[in-house]
Length: 337
Image (cartoon, rainbow, N blue to C red; front, side, top):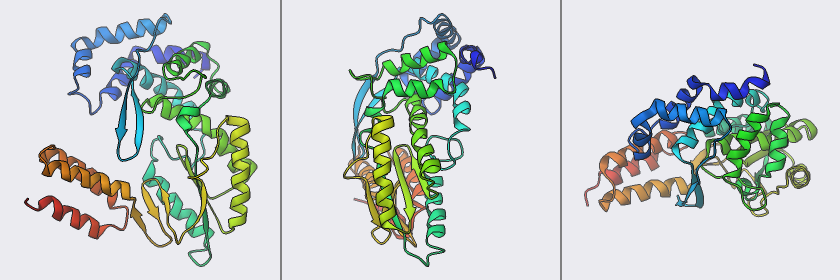
């Protein structure tokens, strides 16, 4: 596809219909979806005209605090703006995705946190020579990542692959809606933020894989691990990575959350606590499920909603060594007060 045709592809009605279908998935009972769908075609045509004529402006984000249990500020885009987010990603994401490294695991088709944890154990077996040698892990986290993404740097990175002024204009409109006073930041909750997060840190991926030539590296959004037999080598790499982030991307490693860990201590990664021979669920995942059960016992939650939560949690928990935990959770649900 010629890069100059991207904007026309984004505006195409069939693409907007596909974007609408993706945006409404699992949300068909929401009032804002029902309101939009009182005249779906008319609203999509109006949105198409606004994008074509470059008169489109996103509505203000609605922000709220989510505690599950970590406190996070989530920003919610208007439904019509979410359609635009999907429309953009439908067309330009494949262009970028094919250049991403294999072990960039977040928000990509066929990957995710379970893929990331499989890769962790794949590299663990390699580094330890099938568990016969020692292994250390650099567990790293980027400080305030979504708040610190620099818009100027991000746009320059996008322009390397996307030579289309109108598409850049549309992306800038999305970014402006979530920026702070320093032209930084992306709202947690936007589909585009997840996609742009991968573009921004692809520079780090390239540096780690091709400049430092590190093999056992896995990244999930801004959370990454490096496995190696030498603690000293990991310390050197940590310093070089922090320097690269500061100089090239205006970011830095979180000083408290970025450290070198022995596998005997267990490594927190993508929802699991990973040890050499087994993995456990992180405490926050267990607490979250217990809180749902408590809400049900206090009649704040229906059994149907509890069952939905439990089924999703159990499917996830099965990937850990958790058979006793799952049995005790079922027992707790079934107990009569």
